[in-house]
Image (tube, rainbow, N blue to C red; front, side):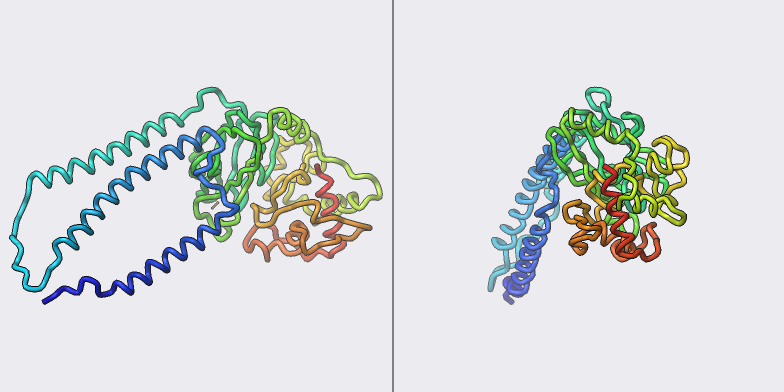
Length: 366
Ligand code: CUA
């Protein structure tokens, strides 16, 4: 009886076409996504080299094994009137080859991996910047150990060329810190403080994300690493160490400040140095569940990247937001639970006037 070798080829063809099509569609998702293949620092560069090495080894094995398999299926398929093949059992030479060959390949991968791990375990020079990255549900807080203890959220500012040591802290669930263009993933484990380091070679904004499922809003736990040239970084440090700006009397900003710090206002959860905190080291900060907003006006992400914040799309003319539907901060203050269900920001409904005052104030916190 003839074996129907090509039965089902059509069905497989359809399946493979569907897979190819979906991979093209998914590839389109990557337009604004960072890639481990575009490293912007020495750590990510070494990891990229390891990635290519393992991919090449795996490809050689895949092509060799599948090639022999496909060759055998076609060459030795059953034909009409073909005799029963010779029945053989055991072949020492082949068995030794298929045990030794994979061992050599796996050993090569092991050596490459260990070499990379040892090389990246410690930076060659002491850290220039040390920062604690605290994983909250669901946003990242950055507490500088150096730079006089500046505290920020969603954006981590670093100087180019500097060794940045990141101490990973969580007091809730396991998160994972990942900046594809700068450094691989490291778990952020409650009760076990991991560390990593990276260096950014070029100025720019690098997207980071949480790479370990940590609850409903895991996908909305993004952050930015903003790499400044060393001079700009020093300017940023001076700016960030200063107390928050005090708005002028009678201004829209001042009305927002009153609302912010009033009873039942935002200071129940958010700290601002110069308003409800005397310094970044103020112990009262420990009791506040929301991000420190001292220099919020200079940041560009809101709420773990669920919305972006761009002052030009939140322009206020004659006390009115001119394009509120394009203003990420308006949308957030209007309905924080709608944009990020389950997050800690549970507030009463604010009026458009109140939101406008708050936006004016928050924007003034440069
Ligand atoms: Cu934090 Cu996923």
